[in-house]
Image (tube, rainbow, N blue to C red):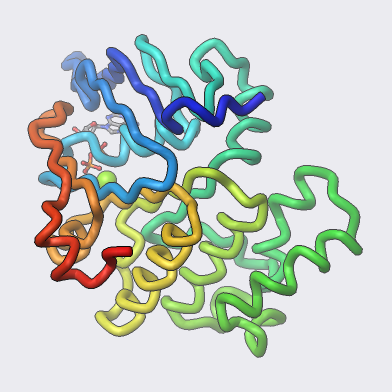
Length: 243
Ligand code: ADP
Ligand code: MG
């Protein structure tokens, strides 16, 4: 199904309006966006500017009122809820500020959850989970419940869950928002390693330093993209990720 020649994301004329009492709020206002495979984008802007609404639509957690959203060559807007859920599971990993882990499941079980939902056998689940637990450095914590883990460990579990289906696209909404500087830096480092391995990464953040690390910077105000800038070659050299 995947059309590997096309951009990973193609959004055209997308709107999302919420009603606040009787007042319409244009959370996302006629946005167009093309994102190439393997890119690394940050989305910044004031609170209420529509960043999460846009990310939720890119993550197929929410549907635009109108417009087109093509992901990996498939037109997602006409999909019904079931098709959208399946496609989301195949294509997208999502990381939230507040982790969204299931409190009664262990770290390992939380990471396995998408595989269970996809009907994958316990043996195959264990086979796929092992390298991810290793990579995230969660070996000794795999049997712990979320409330027995630090914020940084919880976010790494959430990243493990996001990765387990080998998605093309990794979306992160304020992934370091609840973390101390050190754990936040570790989470960012991990996300950037995954991007270097080929995953397309979109990070919404308030943190200017984090936002500046991305190769492409988008700024939203009042539901509009008001700035869309690529890092200059000099900036890429300076940040040490030129390859
Ligand atoms: P950001 O992530 O940039 O802070 P959001 O995308 O969360 O912004 O919100 C954009 C605007 O849409 C805000 O005015 C917000 O109040 C409104 N909004 C977002 N989600 C909803 C919702 N489910 N119902 C009503 N209004 C919403
Ligand atoms: Mg938000």
